[in-house]
Image 1: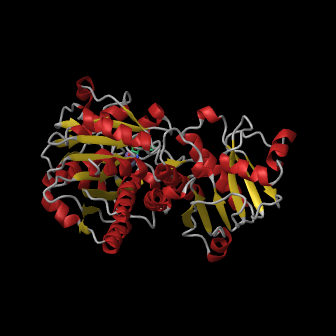
Image 2 (image 1 turned 180 degrees about the vertical axis):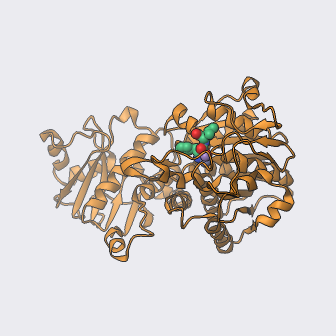
Image 3 (image 1 turned 90 degrees about the horizontal axis):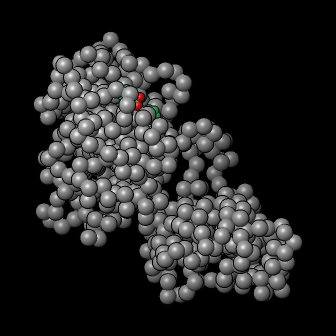
Length: 498
Ligand code: BES
Ligand code: MN
Ligand code: ZN
């Protein structure tokens, strides 16, 4: 879909559809007032009749409104003017896109970016509008037959975004570029998550990383099993040994910061399918464990976004990726693995595999002398129980880093919630037979998982994002969300601007 920015007149714009906001109090936005006045109060009349109440996310399409050049006028409900936050703004934008797709319009001009949204500048309003529109417009049809593909390809071609004054066009264009960059990373993360696990395996992820690096000109390296053995990544290899598909360790380097600037390292969990291993999972919804590589997908997506933005920062991406399968050679409960750090780990449950692959990647991260390390993982079902599907769980050994990430999540509308990782929780991981056990029991499952990781992250500032509840949706709307690419991008952009 093609966007462009203009400073338009709602009545004179010639498009298939003009999109206008109306508040619940029946108060018309400035652009809606423009249309109302040229059409002799037509919009006011409709509101008086009671056919449109301006409730948030409602829409109404009017045809051939007098003295309006465009064939359709879409009214979009904005809810209460006093409650019109970024979140409501994005909801209204999504609703307008959904209604537009259902209509026969092939192009449109939207005036929603002219609305007052708290204290947001036009640049931010445009970026959010573009992100929300592309997010709502996303379809996964990469592996449907040609015929269905043709049916699902939307014929919506372009949306012009009007801003209230010509002076805002430059900043609005910057917002457009930002929004498109975030959306393309989000879309990549969704695609990788949605692909079936027989396609999106460790080899596929490595190929995607190499292709991204080629396309954008950043360095990508893929370590094979022999190299991982040499590095002593016994914990990661222990997870992968039950699978026919070889493990890969992906290293990406976006080095656009100042010379000598210490990098931010992102580490993504890349289990391309999690059966639980010998501690086999129950059958219900096991297909969703194809999403167990969404941490990796978010790192790849974020790299795509920051590459498109040409972000002036040093960022390293590390992705340990393999399958967790039951097999004659698979790791058993009771096995002890030796991690790259030298710490030995008693595997009490082979389904707690994410931490086993991440811990070696965290040790590997030391060599980059990072300014901060953030790992992203669909790590625990317990995190879903604690926070549901709205907030990502945030754990950190450094409060300032935690707050940076929390703030980034707030501004990106991709929120995280700070969880405790107090000393009191650590003894739950004690083992009689090794330095630590890989599980801490049922209580505080997401916290003990984070405590486990923290033992491998003592040499730098580190945060862990548990995205088990936020990376994908189940049920009728099953699909990847692309989270937390917006959070990570906001975090990195803030760092680059420091
Ligand atoms: N990938 C899962 C976590 C998960 C489960 C995420 C369901 C989203 C939905 C992870 O590898 C896992 O299996 N964790 C176990 C840990 C337990 C054995 C300590 C869990 O959460 O049950
Ligand atoms: Mn598991
Ligand atoms: Zn897992």
